[in-house]
Image 1 (cartoon, rainbow, N blue to C red):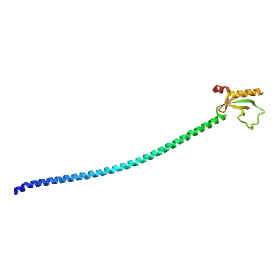
Image 2: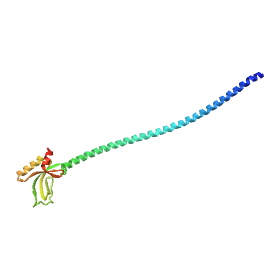
Image 3: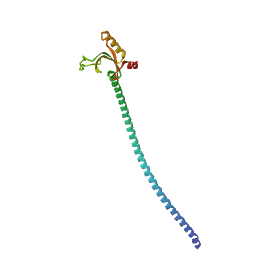
Image 4: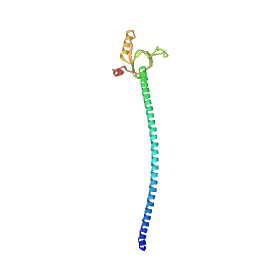
Length: 187
């Protein structure tokens, strides 16, 4: 029996040592598993935080896209309003230029220039009758034409009815200019 004890004792010691090594290894593995679980939980928290940030960014993106779309529609409405206002301004400008002596080239038929016996300057004039004081003379003109030939026709008619000193005068942008300087630009 002694022999049996001698044989079993090393086996038991060996077995105890193997068990202790296994226990140590199991403890180390348990610590590694706990550490891995903590890292996994930390990563899950980080993923959740990133997911929430992503959701927030997506909501911000959607709000910005909505605002951008609204601003684009407002911008288009303003462009259309601007275009309409520019068209209206163009029409008003064209009407003003067509009716004002201050724009473009105009022709009148002057029927007299007087240094004495002037007409009262308070008399009301129209587009058809013009009285202007220039170089100490009072100049009286009839008509208002954009076309030189129309002014020439009035001059001819006035001469036929006895106003022999009738002649065509011209204006450019509201200033009197020699007829020759604007007839060439007209044709």
